Length: 263
Image 1 (tube, one colour):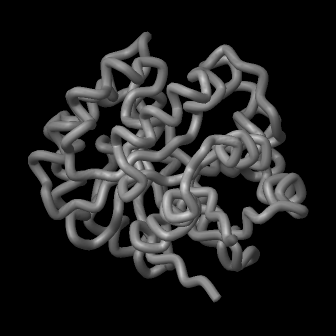
Image 2 (cartoon, helix red, strand yellow):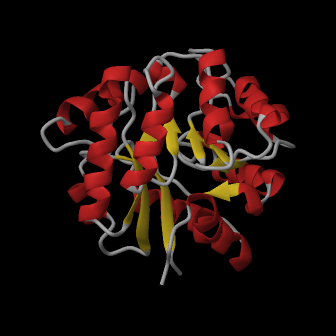
């Protein structure tokens, strides 16, 4: 069975050590991998994970164009990759950059309100969602017990305000506050990814979340390089999921959300 990893961060090889160290310090975890495209492909080489949705988040408006060029170049070099562009609410000419992202072949937008330091439902952010609604899908970080930028209530407001926006809320919409996210995410029209869930939640609870939210809404993601994609895949496979549930979570939903061509 084909497996698509829908949540992978990649960094330029010269910047990867510093970037990976910074992410590890931000989340207070020991990073599993090094963060380059080459390492992502190496660690998954002998696994069923054959497609990857990759991104690089701009921490400020100045970095947006350079990172979009980088991700697009990595996708050209690696046909296994589907690239998501980055934007920042403080940048000028967001319309122009969206058009440029589409021309570059990028298939969506990744935002991380906590590290980019903006409220997910701020006026500037909501203007971005309005511009991409019906054009590009959004993968957005959700949740953190330390911050309010991406609280699940903000993610819920985005879903309610833009019903035609294809959105995937990362980490079940509420990293580290998974239970707090439930009332906001349970009945919303959005997808949810399973990245950075299994290291913090017992397997029986992960299964409970899957059955509660439903396989039709869920995407497999590893949050590479924070975790090893193969280990995340193998842990999920140990759950008593049906073949239909596995197919939806591991690849069928992903090709719909991110317009991924498969053989």
